[in-house]
Image (cartoon, rainbow, N blue to C red; front, side, top):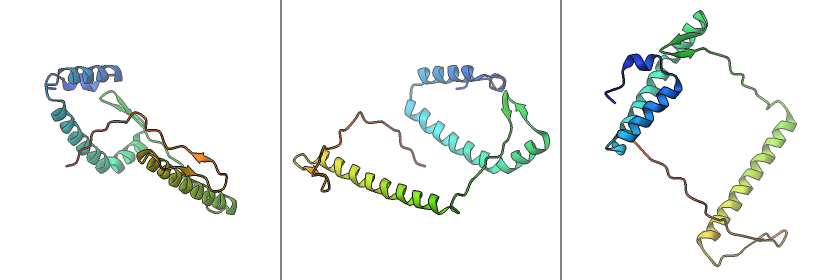
Amino acid sequence: MENIQTNSLEHSPRTAIKKAAQEMAANTKDPARLTALLRKLKAYIDEIEKSVREQTLEALRESGAVQVFGVELDYSAVDNWDYSGSARWQALSEHVERWTKTRKELEAMMRNAANNPGIALVDEETGEVIPPAVRTEPTMKINSKF
């Protein structure tokens, strides 16, 4: 990490950043320690960004797009829409919520059947025998808290 020059970060395209990250990953002797440090730094960076967000938006409104350290900053409005004035939309949303709840209940039963061989699931309306869920390759994740 100590070999990265500030000047090189000021003008690095994404490919150079990716290359530096790959080199850092390949050369670390303690990946868990590096990951912990990066998570903590990311938390600091996220909080700092939140703290200066309004000031940055105001500056960009006044000046328009700017380029700093090889990063172009600009802003745009993101429209938000409220559809709740439509009775049809509300009815459709209620249907989606009910079907989503029903699907999640079925998924839970199928997982339970997979974890408890011998349990047979039968759809009471159709008589269909519902197969247990099939476990796929798990996704590994790294948890952190501080």
